[in-house]
Length: 90
Image (cartoon, rainbow, N blue to C red):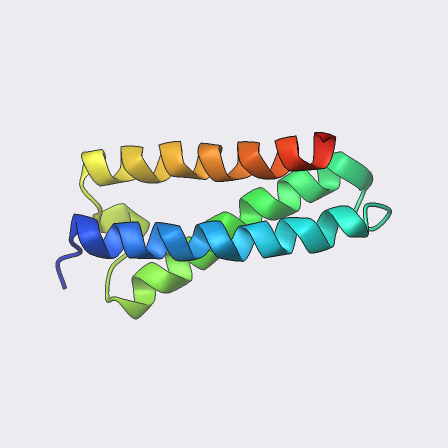
């Protein structure tokens, strides 16, 4: 299946909401998982795992994306994670 930009945007929007909830829960329980560095690592891994699972469900993979789409994923991942970290700092 050829993944369109619109499909990728839907996946990234879902990941945005999903990781926001996950980050809120993780930061509420900061003492688990190695403190802040552990939570950062956990959230980054969860983004990657959930993204790949959603792509596989669409009969695709991160490895099958065009370079422009991969760049979009990388940029969006950084935005999502930065927002989660900044929310904790505030």
